[in-house]
Image (cartoon, rainbow, N blue to C red; front, side, top):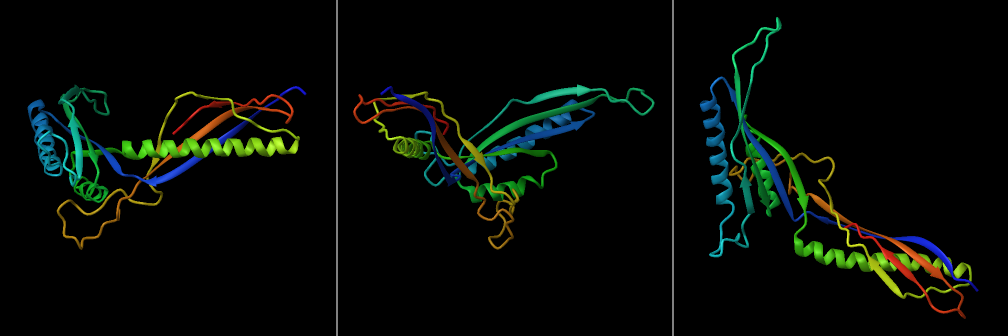
Length: 244
């Protein structure tokens, strides 16, 4: 009897509360004098950098301590531009100058992240661009291993369902891993991103609560199977594509 070839999908999905949040923000200023708007941006950026330094104590080798709320932060150089606005009669107005700097901060303490956001929203020249939720590298590595195993079992179980109905058996002989990997992240629906300002009394209301984001990883296997009769040689080909 000729081998019977089929294709099935195996999947594993695991959701975990986010272990860290990457806060991305921009400090900007606009006005008629380039020096003034530049100083405003630099002053605010320096103030924020000092805040993040206090939240990121270092060990002797320069890495963040185990209890540090912030593990790393970075900022861009000062960027400036100018433009000439026009009034309703299309007549040129005085030149306007703009200055900006962007900062990226990795928070390991999600509650502290909520408090800092509460402080940042009180600044007129600070814009929160995004918060990216993620898992630690160690957690991602462990979950990927677990999900690959679960996805393989899911694919093989499906294959056995098909094989049993047509009087065939499935035997593995080869697995090919495409090596592709991605991570999808999201914050829980219905939660505000804003909490009490950093340094506020502990009894102050915090809309963000514990500020838990979520990250989920997915393994999707495309499995090509040869279903064979019991008396035939044993063959199973698994073509593995991983999205985690």
